[in-house]
Image (cartoon, rainbow, N blue to C red; front, side, top):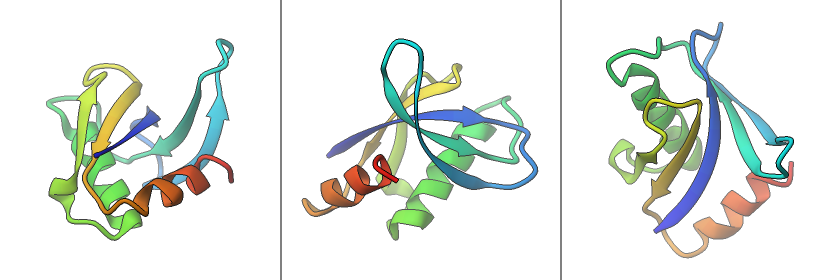
Amino acid sequence: MHRLTVRVQPNASADRIEGPETDAAGRTYLKVRVRAVPEDGKANAAVEKLLAKHLGLPKSAVRVVTGAKNRLKGLDIDGPPDLAAVLAGMMQE
């Protein structure tokens, strides 16, 4: 199980992964944009689907576990041990 922190911008013009950013408190997160609206979990589902596709995993392998109603979210990702290196690379781009 791997953990990833993302900041989501809903209602974007396209679904895409922007890259890593750092907030004023020094926390690093992955910035993600999704076209879905932030109601009834639609944006959360879009984030799960986008990251699963990007990582080559099934949709069920990516779950929002914290921040369901916030822009800053914690995701649990089920994947092989070498996925940690892929996630670390995404945070360095």
